[in-house]
Length: 294
Image 1 (cartoon, rainbow, N blue to C red):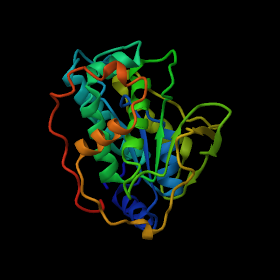
Image 2 (tube, helix red, strand yellow):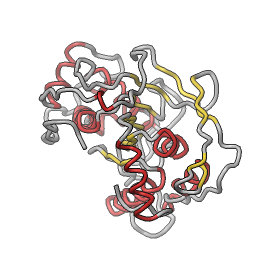
Image 3 (spheres, helix red, strand yellow):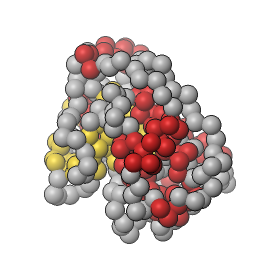
Image 4 (cartoon, rainbow, N blue to C red):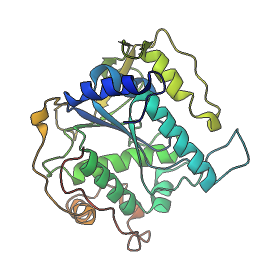
């Protein structure tokens, strides 16, 4: 845990102590560094005191840059640092995969084809194995929609990873979609953090404003209160367990074997369109942890 900008080392230590008593874990997943929901991340981190993380499949190197001439990989580095700065404010750890932000895409199929999805799927599975969230929340829906193709592709890979590890003892219990507006499961994200002396709306605004290269700058919303989510039909009806007894015995495996097992057991229709896109030549999968993460 790094020193918190708002309260210094003593504040960070106070939060660390409180979180040691709460082993609930939740992972938020989207496509780009600025796709996160800082209000929800701050609510989980500082009000519910869950171990919270944000997984951005790309580093945003295909986006715009309002601060300077850097594009491509240099911009990806800038946006990575902006995301990590936001994480120091909303309390969520940051993860990324090998997926490349190649610019705007109208179709999820195009994004999956260029990303070489098995490699990205292996990265997601490795992160699930390391962080071991009990609930995964996708920012976007896997269903076709008039949105960035990266968004839909990210949601589809979230579903694929969720199903691929379903038989593991550390598998997430639920996968939900963070939609904005009814119908859905409503969560009141309005709160006040006495350790920081700030409201959730203030924390969310400060975190969101860290994405300066994208022109973000947000004032606190006093009426920020509700978020909604929907549980996909394939998900198991379970939630977050905050007790220390949640630890399970690790089950060593490999990302590649889990991916292959999932592909052999179920093949979504949207996957068939990219099944022959050079998936045999992909980087070596990340190493798996040998025990519970700290």
